[in-house]
Image 1 (spheres, helix red, strand yellow):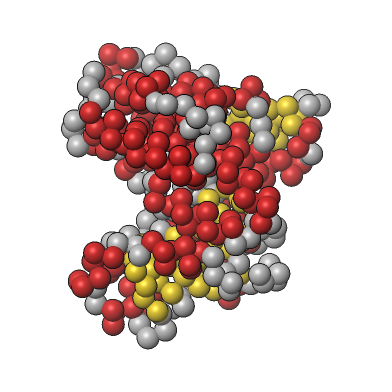
Image 2 (cartoon, helix red, strand yellow; image 1 turned 45 degrees about the vertical axis):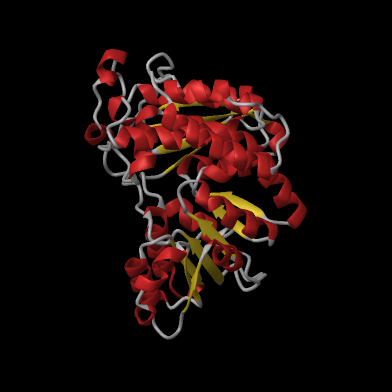
Length: 388
């Protein structure tokens, strides 16, 4: 691995999605300090080809081999080798030349690439929740065994990662994850019953993909972040709290045993946590938006509404139990969100459906990766059959 932190060779898994495109903007802004080594996408070959022509990576990968015959390989340029299949994603993520691997693949599809990068001892910036929610114990154990560094790229865990530099792990009393509250903050259960996909996709502060935006509206994203925080930072569940912060300026807090509370503040812009992961342990000027201290601002904090947003409570319960619960909750939620977006499930039924699948699954307290993937598949099938 290249030890010169001023120049990093980067692989971006999921480069055509929102995290991937933001990452490439950061790379472009950092100039000669960054070299794009590999890019991957699922089926968006024209977008991947345009990125390849611009950034000239050594490898570009399309994970869906079924589209091979439709792809115009000449569009990728002469500097880039075009590969197909999920095995190729693992190969690029683990390439000897790679220094940093950023994973922005939404869903369980990102699990194999992250696992390969960790096993190869890379610095891994994880933007997708699934690897740690599904297999946090296995991922952190593998990172310790192979000398990999996991740096969270989502804004909340990046904030905690940064704030924890102010003390020792043993000095942390608790962490407080902030949540915007989504578009339905303050709504009653009756009002939530009639929420449409169009309403739920209108997030007040963040511009994200459809699945993550729905998770923010149900607060299920925060439930998944509770599980992530447990594994990332070695916390007990009673050390994790959630507070509603509509402005999305403070991205999370760390409270130390002496009473000091350290927070990380910045505008709601994913480019900053992405850049932090790319340049760690250095901080450099970049393209992320900055706070304007010449204008007034008010910062509001409220306790979460667990009664009307019961999905959040699932996060605490799953983090407490561990085992196969994370894989089952993640899969059930993905399926429930897909059904909601298709008009086949009410918004208020998403957490109810997830609860039912979680309660029905065959719990294993110490699963292998094979068992986690089996439970993932089972939960995806079960959520399609669920009826209220």
